Length: 501
Image (cartoon, rainbow, N blue to C red; front, side, top):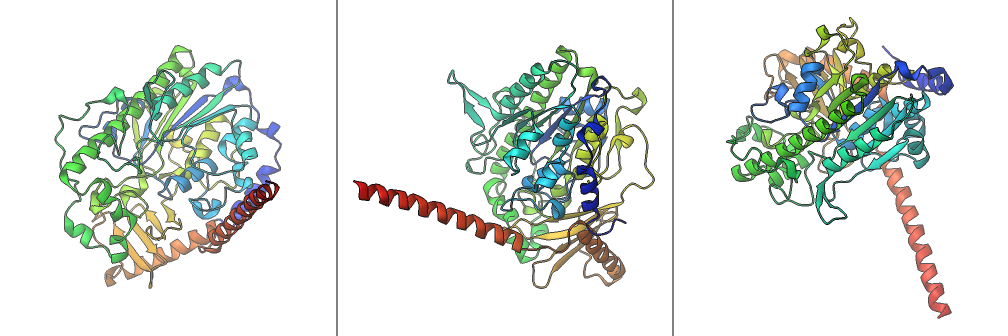
C-alpha cells in the first residue's frame, strides 16, 4: 500500500531525470494514435454486443487487437477525466475539473505528451482538449496542436459548404501524419467532441446531436425500444437529491418522450458511426503512407452516458452507465495468438498515460497512479493486478451531487458526502448487476459496508485526502478580483478619454 502522498516522491524523482535518459532508437519504437470519443458507454459498439449500432472500424480493431470489457473512468465528466488521461492521476490528486485552477505545472510537465516529446517523439493533438493548463506547458507538450470546438459542430468552409467537427479532426490527423519525416516516431491524440450533445440546441435530432453528412439516414429503419431500465419505479426509488439533480434535468432535454428518445438515439448513434468512419479514414491513410504496421491504435471514451436509463441523462453519478467506457488496444506487431481477445481485468483512465509511455519505451513517471496495460495486451495476467478502484465526482455544481466511492469486482460503494447525513449506496453486482438494490441499510451487509467505507477512506487519503472546498472558493475569489481590477482599469481609461475630449 502506498503511503499518503507517495505520488509526490515519485514526481520529484521523475522531474530530476534528464530527458536524455529516456531516449531510445526511434526505429525501435512504434507510432501511437489515441482516439478518444465523448459520452461513449462501453456497450455502444458492435463488438460489445450492440444489436444494430454500426462500428466496423472499432469492431475490426477489437478483432485484431484486445478489447477491455471492464474499463472505467475514475471521474465521469470530461474535464476531470481528460486531465486524468493526460496525467495518469486521479481527480483527487490532479485537482482539476470545471471551475478549478489549471492543472498544476508539476503534473502537466509530466503528462504523457510532454514525456514523449522529451523522449524524441513528435506529438500532436487534435479536437477537444477540455483542460486548462499553462500555455508554456501546453507548448512543451505538443509539436502540433489543433483544437476544434463543437459550437457549432457543422462548420462553414471557404467554399460555403458545411463540414462536421469529426471530419475536420480526420482531415487534420491526415495532415499531421503527412508532416512526419525522418526517423522520429509520432504520437497523435485525436479527441472527438462527438458524441456529446449540442447542449445549446435542444431541438431533437440534428439540432441536439448533429451528425456528419456521410451517415445521413442511418438507423431510420430500426425500431427503437424504450431504455431497458425505464421502469418509472427505478427512478422513483432514488432519494430526492438524485431526483433533483442534473441527471434528471437533462432527461427532459433529450429522453422524456418515446418520440424524442427515438429521434435523439438515432442521431446519437449516427455521431458514433461518424467517429468510426473518420477512424477508418485515418487508419487507411496510415497504410497508404506505409506506417500502419508500426502504429499502435488505442480507442476509448472519456465517460459513460445514461441515454435515459433509470430516468437519467448525462453521466456524473456512480452507476455503471456513467463510469464504464470502451477500450480497445491494437498493436499490429503483436503475435496472432494474442489477437481478438477480450481482457476482463479492470482497466482505468489512469492507465492510458502509462500504457502509451510503456509502448513507446519511455520512462513512466513514478508518481503515476495507473499501470501499463501492455502486459495484459501481450497475454500476461499480473498476479497483483487491481481488484477495485477509487472513483469520485467533485465538481462544484448545485445540481451535481459530489460523491466518492469504490468500484470492486463484486461490490460498488458510493458516498454522497455533502448530503446531511451522507447518503450511501451499496450494490452487489453478482446478484444485482443492474444496481437496482441499495443494500446500505441491510443489516446482513453491515460488515461489507463497514469494510468498503474503510477502503474508500484509505484510497481517498492516499490520493489527496478529504475534499477541500476552499480550493475552488479561493480560485473563484481570485478570478473575481482580477475581473474587477480589469473592469476598473477599463473604466479609468474611458474616464480619461472623456476628460480629454
